[in-house]
Image (tube, rainbow, N blue to C red; front, side, top):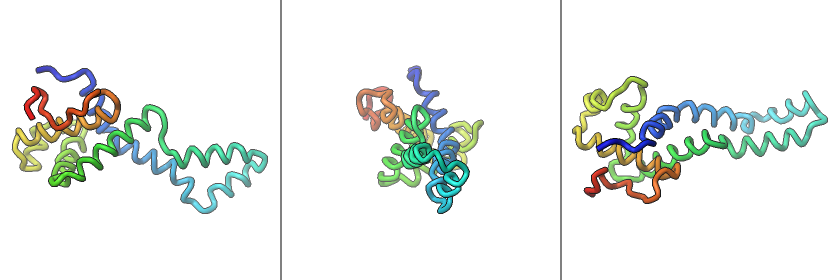
Length: 149
């Protein structure tokens, strides 16, 4: 059975998640600095509207496609953490996607989970992100690709 056309796109979203987290932190860092707004006003005191717009953007964080990808992965991580074996699943997903050249076989060897379990966990996680990105109409996350629950 071939993979859906969006499969590689979702995997790239997972691999880019740490970069997007850093961007999100950078955007919000402006709010956490006590003198960030004061410094911006001192540099350009005649632009209060621009400062207000920057404040609104900083509160919202990443926007557009990158923001959607960031939030989809974040929500999938939260859902997975709520599962009884969520920590183990997230640890495996971290091993699988931490290295750009990591393969499923190497992650299985490092984590000690069975091949079937690893494929199931990866598939559920990827489908969960696809659902949050709007790539799946139905929430068939907990099913195997062949339709076997």
